[in-house]
Amino acid sequence: MTPLPVPGDDRAPSPVGLHRVLEPTGEAITLPQAAQRLDARPELWPDEVRIAVETLNLDAASYRQLALKHTSGGRVDGGAVRAEVLDIVRERGKMQNPVTGSGGMLIGTVDEVGPESPLGLSVGDRVATLVSLSLTPLAVTDGLEGWDGLSEQVPATGHAILFGRSIAATLPEDLDPHLALMVMDVCGAPALVERVVGEYAARGIAPTVAVLGGAGKSGSLSLAAARAAGAGRTIGVVPVERERAVLVASGLADAVVLADARSPLGLAAAVESAGGPADVTVVCVDVPGCEQPAILATAQGGTIIFFSMATNFAAAALGAEGLAADVRMLVGNGYVPGHAEEALRLVREVPALRALFEGRLAAETAGSDA
Image 1 (cartoon, rainbow, N blue to C red):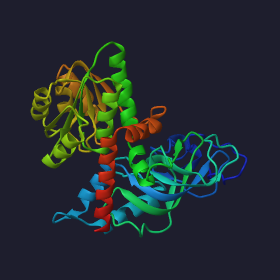
Image 2: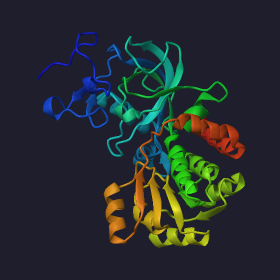
Image 3: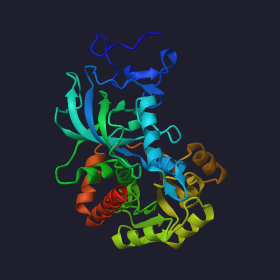
């Protein structure tokens, strides 16, 4: 087996991080996201950047899976969640949930910049990474001793490596960094929603937009983005009365309905009762089984944006075929140029949206301290 080159030697690194892949190797080598194990050593290749980690933000689908796995008697065993996250990072050299395949993102301070890095970062910059932890070399050195395992945001000490083709954004000075992290974690959703709704608006159509999981982070941002981009009607779909009350009070949606996003007839009926079917349906829920219900809730010729790591894309494609549904289905890949700036702008300019995020952050902090 050819040994991995030592950082600093004369082999040119790959801007997408192939030189950090430990497993598999040779002809079977994959990109870092699909790799089983990454090299998370702190030494840099010339185009890399090392980040001193402050906080990890586990994506919603990943944290939900871990919390449910370690729930007994209605209580989450935070210690078991913490131990599993540590095991994943230790074994894989990155934070990638082996069940969901997803990771999250982080905030930290730039510790060192390779001389050939194209990212425009400087030592001392406080940044949020805008690429998934599922492909980011990561080492944790404090045992996550400051985290109780009961929230998605994880205080941590360690380091992470960014490649030449990674993305990071400097944290804004006017927002709490943990609030900014919460927004940036899902900033791809509102940017893509704005693009899609804008396409309708450019044709003189003010579409009806339904957002499944409208009271969540990506869902609330998507509702705000849809309205700003020219939606004629916005419908928020939530599963429980508590979330319905929160979303109604925010005014982010023209209508809010209760429905299980996994129920084909129930979801379609709820959306129709609120003015549907939808021209654009945005799936932001972190549970499986929402593919066919979303299709039934969408008008013929409409668009569905799947922005959930719990989505089964084979089920979506085959479901549309089986239902004879003429719908365009888009995968929200988390990146649209300018996505972080757009999401932060929405939070700054829509008071109800900011209040919703601040309330969520306060609730998570209170739960973690309990």
